[in-house]
Length: 232
Length: 232
DNA sequence: TTTGTCAGGTTGTCAGACAAGTTACCCACC
DNA sequence: GGTGGGTAACTTGTCTGACAACCTGACAAA
Picture 1 (spheres, rainbow over the protein chains, first blue to last red):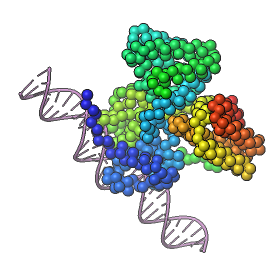
Picture 2 (picture 1 turned 90 degrees about the vertical axis):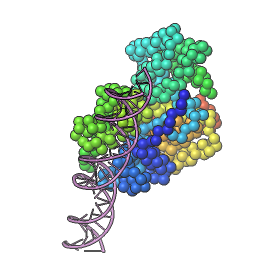
Picture 3 (picture 1 turned 30 degrees about the vertical axis):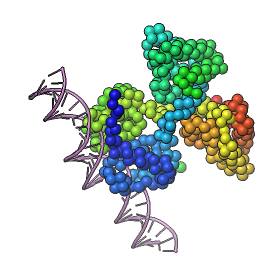
Picture 4 (picture 1 turned 135 degrees about the vertical axis):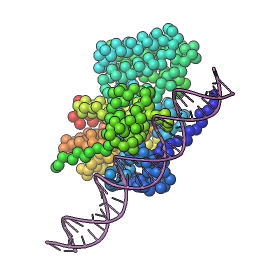
């Protein structure tokens, strides 16, 4: 197995990264004007087209605003138009645990709201994913997808689009973390079974409309998931 | 007061919006190849430079990936590299209430963690913002900034960078919503006083390290805030 | 079957030009 | 002296054409 060879980054990527860092380090202050495209292209030794693409990227991420004829300005609140998990400075150590805390906060609320607001269709969707997981357990297959989908259906049953979308957003960063439960070693340790039992408890609490029980089941499941992953 | 003049959007904005919509509507499937830059420039009737900027924007937002020589491809999980509050399709009605639910979920957890993990410096920072708000109340000034900052210091005291950043992220979308409390009408109704009392209770609970009380105080404050804003 | 070569297509970068819009200064005018 | 308008310089937005770097598929040679 050879390690990936480092492909030289695109020029516009490097320029945008350099600019973003200068903005984050407050070398370019919020509200102040950036150097002109011509100045930047000379300073970085690249063409104006490259600078323009880099700036376009920063515009998309909310770091920069441009006004034709006037110039490019650092946004008043740089980078707060969108939320990213990876802030570029993270070290792996506490990271997962911290993300798990955030995830627990939102999914617990989602479970409680689901208990209060679920429709028959929501329950049917959850049931479907539970059955898919049971099938995966019986056939010793990978239930990661169904696991993922179950959490999404719970979030959808909260009938709060922001919570649903945020759970989905976090979930996509967790697919890898979920796999150990469904791996061969995980199956040998009976992890899928344990997870499934917790899922069933959560489902039952939501189905009977108990907000308190649903929240408790969600907390229990997430904290046990963390343990199964070796966190904490 | 004149209404805003509709400024014609930049071409690259329109192109990127059109492409983004085609990706979201699954007209361009995840993993499939986009038309070439030349084809797009002909189809939209713009130059290739414009298309390139539009694509650069979509790359930054995680909708598209490009490989030199091969082409541009729709990302496997389009648009999930970052979380945005405004999904483009939102209607105002339930919106605020839903965002408040998400905010309550996270800030309640933040308050609980702050009670468990706060340092003396954290408490000092909270105290400082509380005093600033008291001053604003005495002088009938605007305490929005201090209000905002207090919530941020609580989030910081959770010592969870993701929660802190997410609270900040949500907070910036709330500055406007906080103003009614500190407006003239709000002052006349005694709203700042009520909010301040809730802040003090939250601070006291965190200071004495009671997770349960801190969570309860956070829930009470946020639900009362919602009432003061006329939500629910 | 495998390997080397090549041609065509695609993105990445460059250079120069003009259009559209902003800013600051100067100067005539009141 | 203050005001207003005009103008010139500058900046971003867009266009065009060209070449480099790279990928893919097809084909010929071993």
